[in-house]
Length: 360
View (cartoon, rainbow, N blue to C red):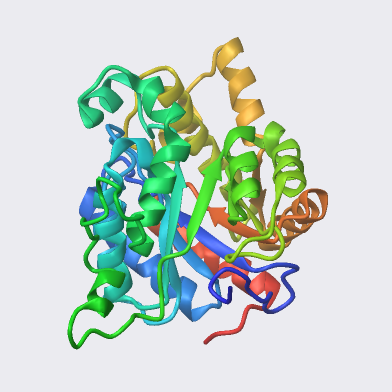
């Protein structure tokens, strides 16, 4: 499908895309972060990036992306060409019909530009997930993921069989409108992507013939095994004739290498606090510079930063090229975590320049 398979531009070996976490830095507000998201989406569109995705997170002060559909509608009104999508919506947190309605609405707002990326993790801690789902049986949602996915797909396609309890229920906007008197069939339906950081979704995506997005940025050790499993499990489908794998990559380019190290240290401190159960706003580089990591914290810091491709634009380009060669990824989706929105915007500018991505 044209909306999935893309053509590399400039000198990039594969298409480059953007994953925006709508990060909120200390001293900033969610309004500031969302304005940066608009700036980033416009920059990505003008510089030839292929997609712009946002991810569902909850109860994290430093991540203002709890409502991907709302943010995507906002971005759709401020862009014209770039593909927009979720990276992802956490399916167990929502009724499939609700997601079908939300993304059917997005597709109506931005025809042919919407991706529906789905994950099975909660995107938060257990207590928050229980509050979202109104149940303490959290594993049930993850275990039921294939069934939830099948239900969501049928709502999107409006093809429940006769006799099914939902056969007379329709996701609107959706295909049912074309069967009403005077109705016209929309030529588009949001393509489904499966997201994952382990082998479960990789195998499922392969078996269903769906495109797969792997979270290399926080599960780097599992990237190659998961992609191998996806390719080995792949069965051609009406969606794809061959596997298509995207990987999310933490990458930050700055004009000077020292500044990249400062920004990544701040992002690492933020991640450390999250892992310790104390999520907060992204600290300033100045705060991070004065923070003294203990022995175990230093071990975490070194492990986490080892998977962030950072430095000057040329250094980041070399790191991305090497990663693509090692994984065989069909697309790289870059996420640039930093305290300030201006730093993130500049990072994508520098990477676009390094690859000679054209201004469009």
